[in-house]
Structures are given as C-alpha cells and as structure tokens.
Image (cartoon, rainbow, N blue to C red):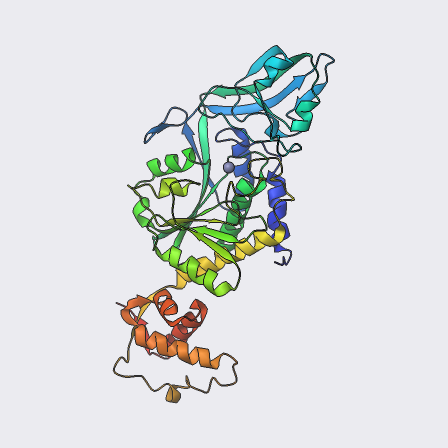
Length: 428
Ligand code: ZN
C-alpha cells in the first residue's frame, strides 16, 4: 500500500477531528459537522429531543465541559482533559465523595490490555462512570475521592449533516458514516473523513446519479433520517456505509440484505480483479447503519465497506484506536477504491447493438487489428465482441463484464468505442 500524499490529507483531517468529544447529540457532534461543512456543502439538521422516530424517541442532548476524579490531596487522578474516553459517554452530572471501594463500581478497565482506556456509553440509561487503564486503576490508593462530572442532559436536539450533490437524474447513491464516537479513529473518523473527501472529489465530477452523504449519529441518526425522508427512499438505487476503513487490513464488504444488488456485484467484480486479498460477508442484522437502511420495510441496496471489521481488532472501542492505528495509505486506498466503485455504478448502463444481424465489420471502421500495437489490443477486440453480442437491451455493462470475465474498464472502453462508431445505441 502506498500513499501519494493524498492519504496524509485525509489523515490530517482525522487528526483535526480527533480531540473533539463527540456523542450521539451535543456540541461535539455539531463542531464535527461544522468542520466537515468547511470542506463540502453540508446542510445541518436539528431534530428536537422527544421527537418520535418510528419506534424510537430522539434522546435528550448531552454536553460535557469537564470531569475528573480527585484524591484527597486534590490531584486529578482521572481527568477528562487527558482523554475524553475517560468519561462514560452520556454520564449524568455528578458531584460526590466516595471511598475507593464505592468508586470502583463506576470504573471500567480492560485487564487484558492494561494500558488502554475502554470506550463505554450509557445513552439510554441514566448512569455515570469513568474509564481508565488497568494500570491507572491499580495505582489508586485507599482514599476518599471526589467525583465531578460537569455534564448536562437536557432537552435539546439531535444533529446530523447531509450533503446533497445533484446529478443528471434524481436517482440517488447514499453514502453514510456515523460520527458519534469521541476520540476513536478507525471506528468513526476513518469513515467520516473518507466520506468527506469523496463528497469533495465528486463535486467536480460529472454525475449521472445524485449523491447524498449522511454524517449521522449511529443507529438513532439513521432511524431519524429514514423517518423524516421516507419519500426519498424510493430514489436510492445504491448505498454504502463506510466504517473502519482506515486500518491496514484487507477490505471486507458486507453485502446488502438483498445479496445480489448491483452494488454487491460491482464490489465483487472490483475485488475479484484487484489481485489483492479481500473478504466478503453476507448480510446480517448486526453492525452499523446498514441495519436500518436494510430493515424490511426499506430493504435498500446498502452494503457496508470495512477494512478490518468492528470487533475483530483488539483496538476496537479503546484508546488504542488512535491516529497511529489508521494509516494514510489505507485511507487513500479506501478513497480510491470507493471512487472506482462509484465510477462502475455511474457507467453501468444497458445498450443495444445497432447492427445485430451477425457481427458488424469492425475492420472497415478501423476498430479491428488496427488497434495492434496496443499491448491490450486482443482484450479490446474481445471486449468489443462481447459488448456487441450481449448488448440486446437486457444486459448491462457489468453483466457483460461478469459473463466475459473481462474487467469492467475494458468493457466500458469497448462500449465507448462502439458508441462513437454508431454501432451501439441506448437500450430504449
Ligand atoms: Zn463503534
């Protein structure tokens, strides 16, 4: 894997967002969206706490200013200012004095990884707690401790960002990334940053499809979006959830609930021809927001792209999922792969052979052999023969690529040449 330097730009955007204490609501999420909005046209939506969204209710808004545990000498032995992972996300405001024994009931560690801080949340249960490394816990002495959590949990809003890039048609491609985790990189910032750079790149490209990028809090965000946009749903033709796409592992794609959607086939095709290791998983109702997009009433063709899957790397949901865990080269490879995938979807049209009675004479049109000299001339001829033969208005270019075993790019190039020479026309 190589980075041309472009990966460094994605990585440094992750570094910019890394210190922000995000959650499923609140100012950290807003600040993240504000910074995304400095790079791409982003509409920010605010949905009031208490709003019913299908079977769920938009929660109260959580904000935090400071939090710590002090020993009797006044030292902050656990300090939110050192890492926002130290506080259980959504901890209710707290101020009290406790013995070590009592305090321990509210402390979370990872004994197997004694230097890492776990990431814990308590969105739907009014709780408070601190997370710390096992080593830090082991160093706490018998003492009276003062616990302060300067947070607020009040009626407010759930915030999400939406970037809509209009295309030639109103048919849409949905790209979704969750942005509700605090200082965590692969699970959260890799998807957020790659999606931002993709949207930025697409703004200057010709687009057949309309693109909708969603930057949302996980689960409640996609549920909220779906409940407010049911009329958009039928226009979504393809979709991709991006999460855990910055680590050094091979790509892993989780298929849509349908299992044979065009995006599933396009991903498989590109993986197959990439010559690199990859993993494919069937749909399961466990993971990221594809669970909501693929719920039975919507059943959208939305897959999920990861590198190493959530839960399959020990750094997952710990302080070790940091800026070193994600690599510029991996972020860049993901970005380029997504662009390639979107290009296949953009170009995957059906055509009709305008000279379907036997093969047209390619030689007199300069399409045969005269391409000799190109190292890939044989492939180009073969691709033309496949496109001519299968372009009966029923087969898409991806169908032809799959059946011929040739790369989509070769099939597309052949179709472009044939179109130019008037041998191919639109399917209808
Ligand atoms: Zn997560």
